[in-house]
Length: 269
Image (cartoon, rainbow, N blue to C red; front, side, top):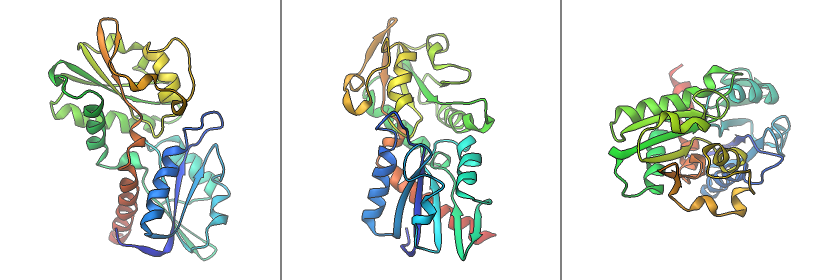
């Protein structure tokens, strides 16, 4: 992208007070973008870690700031929590001589389909797609109906490509529940890709229990290797479980492309 030597980038993540892996991808993508020298400043901010959403803008010196949500869906956090905590008023906020540009979340980017397919191929190389169920797992929530939209949209796109025997969606907190995967997948091979930002509490501690891979929640992903070994033989099926999609190094590029997309949209207004 075109360098922005007078602008700052703030990448916003969820973070966690109980899992050390939650913020790792956001910090890694920020480090990569910082290494490229495209912005005068690159910061991270989190809902559940420091620096907090309501304090990060005070750490920024630039008068033009791009806020990029490192979130999968456009839902409760991107529409309510982040704007409230950061004092944002729509896509562009002008305050105290500053211009704060609020970008789309990474999960809205068109390359998500490509990254999901690449991740699925990577954990189950060579298995016949015609005998495989691809299961995309999201969080889901009853707080905001838009939360599931990103997952449902990707399932529709991948289904239309006719690459797998079937492509299914499932969620932790709304139907269809990931714990019921045996009832709505039919193929002997099941490839599970968590549509999450990090290998944190959900994708590497909660979901494996829900799938039946583990009997109880274990340690954080960075301290264990059990889920790196595929396939898992469950109920006469072969289940392949991947790392969260947001750990892909290409997400740094996606963040930059969301900034470019913001500028392109702003120029058309």
